[in-house]
Length: 444
Ligand SMILES: [Zn+2]
Ligand SMILES: [Zn+2]
Image (tube, rainbow, N blue to C red; front, side, top):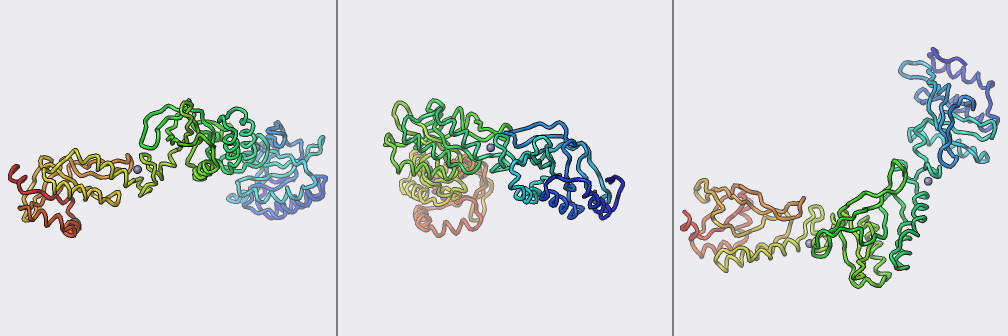
């Protein structure tokens, strides 16, 4: 069967058909399958499906539990190179062999071949070990990545090379290596671990001494988890840990007793991939849930409530508390004005609302007196909510307009008329400052 130099696709297929008499797999089903594949060969197929004599495979090395082997195929695949319109033989090709022990279900195996191509897998053909009489599928070397090196089954997640069965076996073997000290909780953790259906972080028992406590927040403790979460190592196909991850510990008071309600709560966090595991403070015997960053994408890390705006990780309550704490740090010198400013501050609705505040006059550099306003630079600048750092920060040297209010009656009117204040915002004036006249006299 001579191909090199032959150009025509149809002529090549004719040679293949004439060659049917010169080989046999010894199995009629396989022979028919190969012949059909050869007659159906299209010029975009990456190789002609062939019967490959076993002696063409050299350097066979078994891998895994005897389901696979690697080898070099001396003669190599034959294909029609569309661009050059030429038949080509690519010798000494690195291949993967899959043993087909179950000859009873050979038809099922053969039917699967079509579906392999969608994973960039090329099936070159079939061979047979003459000594053991075991048939072999001959793939390109990529295909090997689709099968678990430990058990030989197809990965549940090919991209991550994740084999559910092997992972579960590994976890089961590990059950004897840890305990929470509570049988009910141990059972629960084990049950949750075996429920792992997708490549993901595992829920586990975490000894308290694996944490370095950083800071006590209102309802949480910020800590570094020295050992950190289990993850699946793609290179070595095993569970590994990434070290030193920031975590949040939430104390579960009254949790000395493990109730079903308590376990249901944990399960709901697990469904959202929000927790790494559970621990216990050995001194207080209080259980601690170990939260990851995903959780704090939805819940305020200060108070633990759901964010009012989880896209911008903004907690209204904490913001208001922060403003309230600040009430003693400033005064306009006028109780009525202080009250008004405080009330307005507490009315904040959204993360991007401007925070209305008392501004000492020396924070301004006057630029120009206009007809109704004075333009100025506010050195310290307005407060706004910084999404990244989750706190109020200042935008310094902001250009602003000042409006003078010349008598106390005007102050009262302006203050009572909120409609006016909002409508003035709409005039594209950055900040409206309501300033008592006496300040003007004192400073100008
Ligand atoms: Zn496996
Ligand atoms: Zn909060």
